[in-house]
Amino acid sequence: MSVTRFSPAGLQPHTPYHHVAVGTGARHIHVSGQVARLGDGTPVAPGDLGGQVAQVLRNTGRALAGADASFQDVVRLTFYVTDWTPDKIGPFMAGIESVAEELGLPQPLPPASLIGVESLFEPDVLVELEATAVAQ
Image (tube, rainbow, N blue to C red; front, side, top):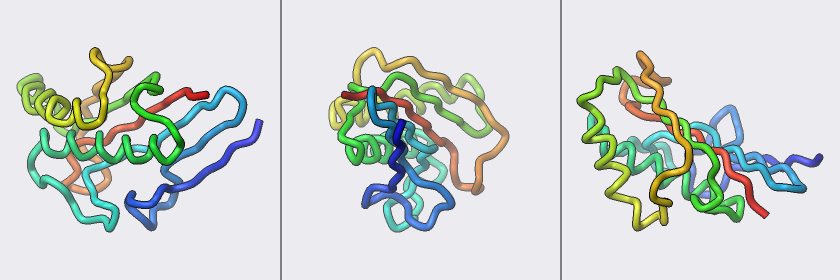
């Protein structure tokens, strides 16, 4: 099995990993944890969970598109949210709903996990999203 690793244009540069890995054959696409950053690393929606959820989905969509895939090919989403409490579900879902049509998110979403964590790699990062897709 051959694996190609790359980082599509428009995603945060200068990271110690590639943003996408594609295995040949039945293509399994693994998107690294995406955060609310623009391609130049500028933070998006500081302090706004819904705004950050929207941006991580946009970045994940960009990574999938770089692998000639889309959210229609996603088989698994894993969200990590800092200081999670159940009252945050409203803003979290609002972030998803705000970009669902724009990104062609399937409804209902693919299998997903939301994992509460104490913190992520930088204090302003409220949410991180990993995705796995299988495409032709």
